[in-house]
Length: 382
Length: 80
Image: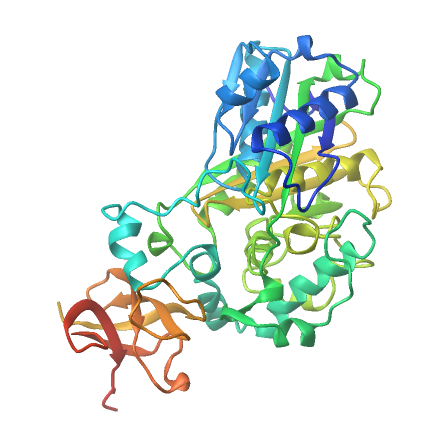
């Protein structure tokens, strides 16, 4: 198989003007604003877009709103990291010649819930409805978090180490004027914030915001025509593991995240030591622990020590979540688009908290609690 | 089924699900049964220190209202 490494690139990347509380915009309007800005960022006009992918809002509704007639559509919507997976599919579609420019859009009224579907409770006769919900589970804070005590027991991961993930994110957020929460916090602050589902405290839970973002992907040849330096797609991965958290194979590691990371590394021909900058989906403070282990940045069980030592913080060996993450920057519900956008900004050299000399950035995370995962490896050079 | 198992992972939920019979904080746990299957449940316990990953538990079918209810668990004394 011919390598896809460096043959496709992100040429447009943008967020909605506002993030946070946007009570005057519906979800499809958030998609549309992000799309307009990303297409303009790419130096393109709408008529050149012939591929479309979106999540949260049905791809058909986004196409209708934008009045696009795409030759390629992708409605993959399997959780927060769907956008890494849509990027993976977009590269395949471009390689197959289905289209020339793929627009990937996200928009979500996570806080204001304008036009948003009610939070999907499982049907009473579904697996989760029969075998999980009756025990007092209400949603992500008490369900997504459940595996972390297995990690703590197996490896000795401490509450303080878990809290240090939130402190790391906040330290980056302090350097980013667009981050929603920027006040400095300490491990003690995190541990004294109200408990949501022990060992997880309020400050270890992501924000809930409104906002959107979009990307434009094309071939490396076309990418050279744009106003911005191309951000090359070096490798992508996707993985699935379980349907409900009860059937996660090993509670102290994520198989889907490992599968996704390994495929992305294989396509890119790189390994963890080649990463200069890392975006890890942080719905809660524990998901970056699973993330650095799945990527092999650290050995299994060493993620807590790694974050506690400040390795992902400003001045650390591998900057993590430099926008402030879902914990302090923004988190609309499906945060993955914002992780990808920060990777793009860092590779371009235009991030608020810019890391010097980023050649390779990775955006990686779970989707649908730990049910699935997506990975994108982006580079300054093909 | 023996009804015997161990706690594979758990959280102390401080949330208040509508209509739920347990007062927060309550334990949501994944329990590994001796027979090799894992299931979501609650561990009914007063003493916080009796809940840990690996703790032995025993199934009970009495809920707080003392009616026959969901399969839940209580700490199991282990003879040593």
